[in-house]
Image 1 (cartoon, helix red, strand yellow):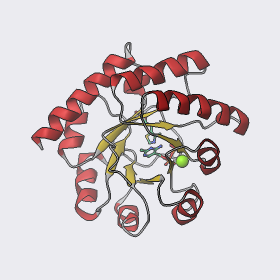
Image 2 (cartoon, rainbow, N blue to C red):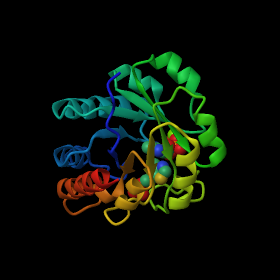
Image 3 (cartoon, helix red, strand yellow):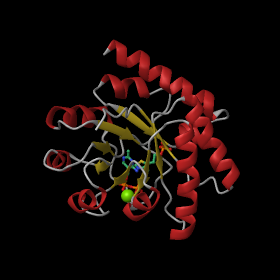
Image 4 (spheres, rainbow, N blue to C red):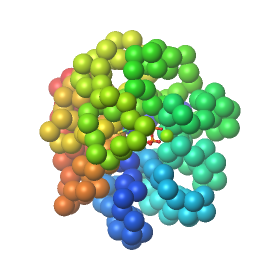
Length: 214
Ligand SMILES: Cc1ncc(COP(=O)(O)OP(=O)(O)O)c(N)n1
Ligand SMILES: Cc1ncsc1CCOP(=O)(O)O
Ligand SMILES: [Mg+2]
């Protein structure tokens, strides 16, 4: 499989209930240069999730940007997405890999050192350090923020690409990349920005500048 660019993941915002607005923000993030998109829907029924996933896939194809699906292996298979992001309470990684095959991306949430060590023995393409900072976007089922110190510890013991998520914005992205994260996954700093395209382009620029100075 080709080397995937995990540097800037836009995680869609389920709080944007209007479909046109939802797709407009997604398209702005694609124009701004996100390297990968994660469709995250916690409340939609299966049919509505599938219909949205098809629309999101079409837009991602237009911008040649990979799409992964949060939680739902069935939806990922149904639309032939590029992969999934699963958490500690979602389908076990081994089973997800069996269903998806070796060429799909599987991301797995990690919230502590024990899980990071476990990840070394799993067939995952990246780990999502969750959360790195405090966030208002996800309030239930969230562990304590790991912070930069936690990222540094995990970087030392885990050989898998790392993406951090939670409370990430244009002020703290550089520090995350500097301390060894391969990328950042972002909801609000893109979806709630006055100009999501500009906000994305600015985040991308910070990542590029920091990456080259690492
Ligand atoms: C990149 C990335 N990392 C972590 C998460 C969190 O996933 P999970 O723990 O399954 O929680 P939900 O997102 O499903 O609420 C993520 N989505 N993306
Ligand atoms: C889905 C998820 N998982 C851990 S934090 C989070 C939400 C991140 O949202 P934001 O970028 O707005 O803090
Ligand atoms: Mg999940």
